[in-house]
Length: 302
Length: 302
Image (cartoon, rainbow over all chains, first blue to last red; front, side, top):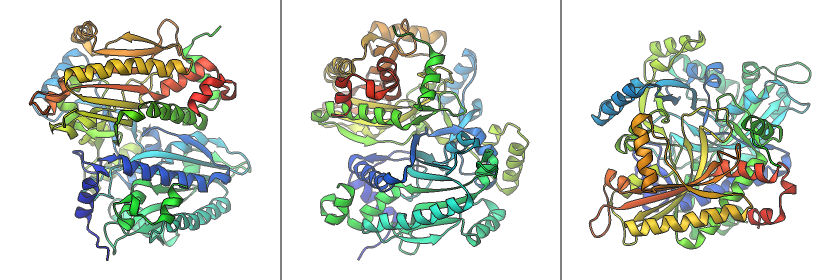
């Protein structure tokens, strides 16, 4: 019988060369076999969507700070944002900075905030590119992105820096909700086809503070967020490996995205947490890839 | 005859859907065809090295701040580092932060420095994993990583966030220099096989300040750095698309990496600037992939 334990699971990932330890919590390296499985799973998802006519693009791990400001990200998740600060100064100031670092002193206050932050959600950089009127039928795009959440943890599925395969739909409320529902079924089906014990559930974002509890309750009541859960480090608290969000007109309003009829566009997105899916596969099927069920291997490497 | 111009080249990349504009300088998105070429070139490099017995691993775009501190990065490149700052505070402080952002005020001073920085060079996170004694024969690894340099520019090849295919060799001085020389020839050969006008040259890092000029002169005199250059936005100032660095015992000393005989290990690395190579291909062969020389297409998509 499978037992679940966050600490021993991390150690096992390291022992099997799947994780390469690095100092900061949640920012470890990945070994070659881990990456092979991650790429194969990502390719399976992209293949599944191949006939949807989805556009593909790639954004860097840093995005415009303006996106965070205009969407109220810091109202909801103030502790999760990683902002990029840098040094601007003359040679004298640079020498003073070097000296502080050499003496082991803190040096963050010698830096100033830049115009970029780490991308907290793969879809964020896409919305500002849609300002204006979207074509009849809306937009439908996919991307793979490194995202960042400032929540250091020893727990291996709680990473700070990880990859998401994201799909975004922009259109009328009916279009995007129908699309979200279709992908919810499809996401569960993809994970089950890999013989993973995946179950969908209504979910809420980890909004900050007491006010956040009310926001989370509203999100659950309106069924704006779903997750697909798989036990990885706990049977009672399975891990969200895929997440579906209906934003209503939040991004359409923030970035002035209009439908051809003049209405503000609605949007929805879904993302597979690629490292979490890989960890779910190793947890479920064991650390020896050669011993995985042949059906699973054939799905990943057809 | 090909003409070179940084501004028109950026506009052409956008017009052809290769670059997706985003607000911050040097952090734009990439379109699908751009990514297809980038992945094909990366695969060509990896294929070329397939018989070398090189280990593969992947690190996130953020690394331990300690690496920057211990290698003296801020002495040499203080303005290029992107440090990650985050908010730690109670609900009252979070509300005050939200309010400042809502009023369009600066908010960087409400954040504090974390234990991670953006990775400035693909190889950096690898060295601390080698602390101790390396095996007989040393280490030989490769990785693809997103790196960051805080140098905002309108010039499209001068990106802040970009990808590097990196190879690292750790061993005796003879081993790593011989390896570097072999890869210098091989790097030029790979680029020339794509009918790119690639030429190698001795080079120096952009060390900061007046003291930096002396460091750069020493680097050139000792031939510690080479680059492979291709005209992309200027014929007179061709773009470095591949860079080779012999570090002597810099990283071996910083991270206490020993050879089996007890000597401090030497290291060298090389990196292909993947976006720059893709831009060089479009500049050299034109924006219509279908019209590229058939030999080039066959090398990229065998």
